[in-house]
Length: 208
Image 1 (cartoon, rainbow, N blue to C red):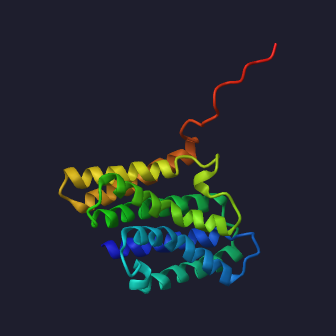
Image 2 (cartoon, helix red, strand yellow):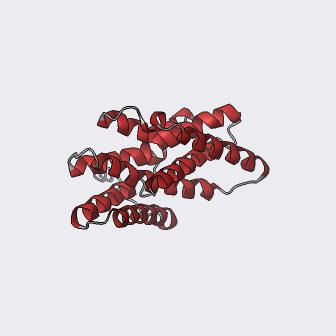
C-alpha cells in the first residue's frame, strides 16, 4: 500500500512542477527538471537530515520513471488544453497532503521526537514546491501572502498523524486521517481564504 501512495505522491508532485512551467516558455527538458525537483525536493532534504542513504529515489529508480512520465503527460496535455489555475492549486494541495504524512511516517521509523516527526512531515510537504518556485524566480507558495493555510495545514496534518499513531494501533487509519486533515485544511484555506494573523506590528499613531 505505501509504495503505491509514494508513487502517487511523486506523480502529483511532478504534475505541479509541469503546471508551474506553463506560460514560462520552458521546453520539455526544463519541465522535466522542474517536475523532478518538485517531486523529490522535500523527500531528498528529509532523507539527508535523517541520515538515510541512499536517498529514496536513488534506492528505487522507479520513482524517477513515475515522475518523468507524469511530467511528460502534463506537458503535452497543457499544450492542447487550457487548464484552469485552480488545477495547480488542487494538485499542489494533494502533493502537500500525501508528502506530509509519508514524510512524517518516514521520520517516525527513525524513532525521533514527535516534534521532529512533524517538522519532517512539513519539510517533505513544502520543500519540493519551494525549490520549484525558486527555480522559476517566483516567491515560494509557502511565503505568499495570498496562499492560505499551506505549511499550517501540513503541520496540523502531521500532528494528527503522530497523535493517532501514538494512541491507536492502526497505521492505515493514521495515514488516512493525516492526509485528509491536511487536504481539507488546505482546500478550506483556498476556498474561504483562511489564514493565520499577519504580523503588521502595532498601529501607527494618527497625526493630528
